[in-house]
Structure formats: C-alpha cells, structure tokens
Amino acid sequence: MEPRNQTVLEFHLMGLSENPDLQPILFGLFLSMYLVTVFGNLLIILAIVSDSHLHTPMYFFLCNLSLVDIFFSSTTVPKMLVNIHTQSTAIPFTGCLAQMYAFHLFGTMDSFLLAVMAIDRLVAIAYPLRYSVLMSPHICGLLVGGPWVITNLQSLVHTCLMAQLTFCAGSEIPHFFCDLMPLLKLSCSDTHTNELVIFAFGIIMGLSPLSCILVSYICIFRAVFRIPSAQGKWKAFSTCGSHLTVVSLFYGTIFAVYLQPASPTSSQKDKTAALMCGVVIPTLNPFIYSLRNKDMKTALRKLGSKAVLSQS
Image (cartoon, rainbow, N blue to C red; front, side, top):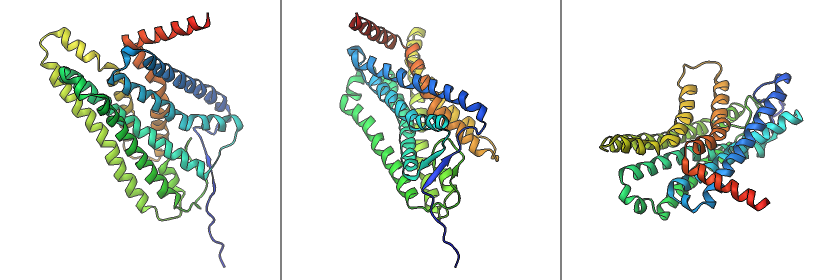
C-alpha cells in the first residue's frame, strides 16, 4: 500500500538571499526602513489629528493612507527581520494564511486610497465652490469605508480558498513572505478555482483604482487648462504634486516589473514588486507628503514645538 501524501503544516520562507554574508546588511537596512516607515507615518497622523487646519478631506485621506502604510509594511518586514535575526525560516500554515490575508488587504487598500485621493483632487480643482458639499464627512466616510469592505472581502475569499487546499509538493516558499502564487505552486490539490478567482480579482481590483486615477487626472488637466492665468494653473497643479509622485512610484514599479517578456526569474520580479510597494514606497511617503507640503511642514513644526514645551 503506497503512503498517502501528508499536508504541510509549516512552511519555510527562503527570503531575499541565502548568502549568509548579506544577512547582517539586510537586517540593518530593513530595520532602518521599517522604523522610518512607522515613525514617519505616525508623525503625519499625529500632525493631522492635532492641527485643526488639517481637518479637511484631503488630509483625512492622507491620514488613512499613512495608517495603511504602517500596517502594510508591518505585514512582512517584522517577520523577515525575525527570520534573519534567529536564522529561522519557519512560519506555521495559519501564520502564512494570516500574512497573505493582510498583505492583499493593505496592498489593495493602498491603491484604492490613491484612487480616492485622485477623486478628492478632481473635486477640489474642477468644482471648488461645491467642494464642501461633494466631499462632506458622510461622503468621505463612504469613500474610505467602501474600499475597506471590498478589500477585506477579497482577502477573505483568497484565504478561505487557500485554506481548503492540501500542500504536499514541498514547504519552501521562494519569497520573503507568504503570497498567493508561490503557495499555489506548493499545492497538490486542484488549484483551477483559485487561479480563476485570482485572475478575476486581479482585473477588478487592479484596473478599477487605476482607471479611476487616470480618468480623474484627465478631468483635472482639462479643468486646469481652462484656468486663464499661469499662476492659477500652477497653484492647481501644485496641489497634486505629492499624490502624482506616489502614484507614479506605485504603478510605475508594477508596470516596470511585470510589463516585461516572460522569463525564468518571475520569482525575482515578484520580490522586487513586493519590496517596492510594501517596503520602499511606505518609507518614502512621509517625505513626499511632508517635504512638498507647506501646511504639513507647519503642522509638524507645531507638533515638534508642543513636544519640546511638554518636556520643559
């Protein structure tokens, strides 16, 4: 009688590199980036909450983006740092599912928030007199709450389908976190349904925010070109600068990585995209939104002054 395949209860994350000489460098690099991400985005949240002048829809969305960036980075980086420090690559099956759920939740939420912020800029530039009505607290709540429901639903579907599979084709995941496709490759079950769902959600969740951003900016450009003065045009465009920078980094990375001919190094492409979107961009966001924004710099200075006065 042939032995039955046993399902894998623990996986091993192979990380970014198996070279032992690189491990201390990677640990120092990603620990620094993670600390910058957490403290930088927390400063933005505290500055917005503490300054009544920033209690506007634009900064409400920015506050949510900063919060999501902290969670997004926390999904993968702490586990990667622990693995490097302890020289252990193990992650239990339940932990793997939880990491996969959180990564797709916060990653997709990031793109939806960028789309919502594009809508906010469109309304502010094209319909300034109706801005307070069109972007009321109720509407802002719906624009943020709706994506939270949708992205949680997506992650829940992926996780439930993945939990029903049997894994007996090995336990080594060639990635630094648990992701959908690397896990599917280790399954000895029929993954046809999973692949169809991944494709369907990928189209809907990927194209919807991107289409919204593109349409919003087409309308913004048309509205700006109707402004008679050059100073007015510049003032309108300047309010979109930080958002355009982040959108360019986010989608530019995805296009640069995946719009290339198929090659045997697809796992390296996945790692590169995940690193940029889940680690590098959340680290850069606080600098992009604070260095290019006078109101934010003023709020951060006030926050710093309050901290100094409270200690004196």
